[in-house]
Amino acid sequence: MITVGQVVAALETAYPPDLAEPWDAVGLVCGDPAEAARRVLFCVDPVESTVDEAAEIGADLIVAHHPLLLRGVHGVAANTPKGGLVHRLIRAGIALYCAHTNADSAFPGVSDALAAAIGLSVSAPLSPKEPPLGLGRIGALPEPETLETFVQRVADALPETAWGVRAAGDPKRLIRTVAVCGGSGDSLLAEATAAGVDAYVTADLRHHVTGEHIDSAPDAPALVDVSHWASEWPWCDQAAGVVRAAFGGNVETHTSIRRTDPWTLRAARTGRTAR
Image 1 (cartoon, rainbow, N blue to C red):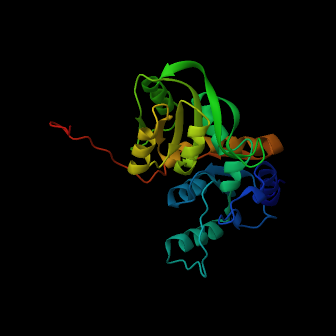
Image 2 (tube, rainbow, N blue to C red):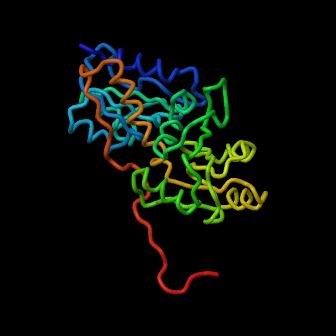
C-alpha cells in the first residue's frame, strides 16, 4: 500500500519545500499521512469544483498548486467557504497537499511545464536562485515566427478560457527567443527585458505596466498575456508524472478537467469601436 505520506515525500523531493517563498503556505493541509493513496487528483485550485471532482473519481488525495489557506487563520468553521472545504475533505477522507512557489522555483517546475506546452527548448531560469533553480524560464522556438503566429501557438497549447490570449507588440515582429513565467509575472519584466528575448509569456499583466514596458524601448520584448489558471495548468501533468515515476501503477493519477479560471464570459462590442 502506498500512503499519502509516501506520495508527499516523492513530491517534496521534486519540489523541495525550502524553495518556497517565506510568505507561502505549502505542504499537507489536511489528511492522514498513514492513509492509503490509491488515486490522486492534480489541479491548480483547491476549490468546490475540484473537490467535487476528487469525490466523483474516488480520489484519496488532491495535489493542488495554489494553497487553500495562504493567509493565517485561527479557525476553519464549516460555515465559512474555506473551512467548509476542509470539513468536506476530512469527511470524505480526501487529503490535500499544496505545492506552490516551491513548484515555481524547482527544476523542472511550473514554468518548465508552460515552456514545454508552448514548444520551447529551455536554456536557463529567468530569475535564477541557483541555476537551474529559479523563477521563470528562457527558451527558444525551433524556428522564428511572427508574433501573431506565436500568439496562436500559445492559444492552441493551453486550455481555452474566457480570458483568452492577448499580446502587446508589433504583430509582424519575428519571435525566436521567449521568456515564460507561470502565474503572475509582471515582477519579472525587467529580467525578461535584460535577457534580450523577443517575447515574454505570463499572466495577469496590468494596463499601465504593459504600456510603460512597450514604450520603454524599441526592442522591449513583446508581451503575451494569458489566464493565470491556464498558465499553470500544464504543471498538473508534470506533477502527476512525478508520482507515476515514483510508484508506477500502484497509484492512479488524474489531471483535473475542471476549468477553475474565475472568468466565465467575454464580449466584444459590436459596431463602432474606439480609435
